[in-house]
Amino acid sequence: MPISKASWYTLLLRKPHHHQNHVVLTRRCGVTCTLGLMLFLTTVYVFWPSDPNLTIVRLKLKRMKLHPLPPITVDISMVLTLMVHNADVYSLDFGAVNVAVAYRGKMLGHVTAKHGHVRPRGYSYVDADVEFSGISVVPEMVLLLEDLAKGIVPFDTISQIRGQLALLFLHFPMKAKLSCEVLVSTRNQTIVRQHCLHQ
Image 1 (cartoon, rainbow, N blue to C red):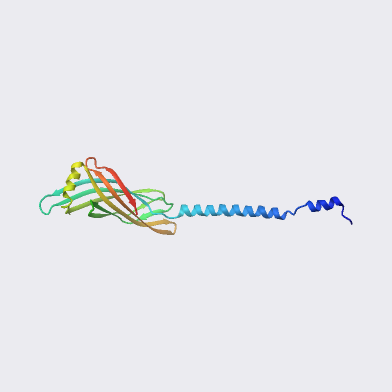
Image 2: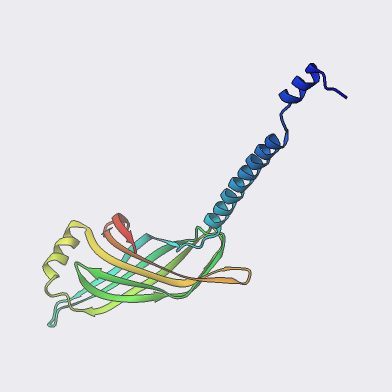
């Protein structure tokens, strides 16, 4: 049967549809893969464990007693409050918190505070009673007397914490270290200024 000219032109002008379907499927696959990758990266970011943040919220001088008889020594008693912030979605169990205190580069000593627990995205406060007896600070004695007269005493603190982040059966070891230069007012027992560095 002969094909008319009109039918022939219609056949020539008709385009196959499989190419359009392939383009639509490729776009859908690209969008799905992109959304899947973004969801995966967001999940990794949210659930990736991070170390806790430490902040000194209080450093109070309770007592400072000078023993003038040779050898010249000083007794220092203070209370330090450390805030532990857990920014993760895991709970945090930490062991003993170790706090070292120095005055103008001279290490006075260190103290270990009790262990604790911090809920996910929560805070916990750790109090440490710091008692240093019979510290020899002869080279720094003049500076200490000047600082006491001014009413502001500078201290250097190093706080360290170790523990585990826990979610169901998963446990991740963690540690945090905070070094601070703290200016304490002896008049109202408050922190005047502090400069801290997380390590």
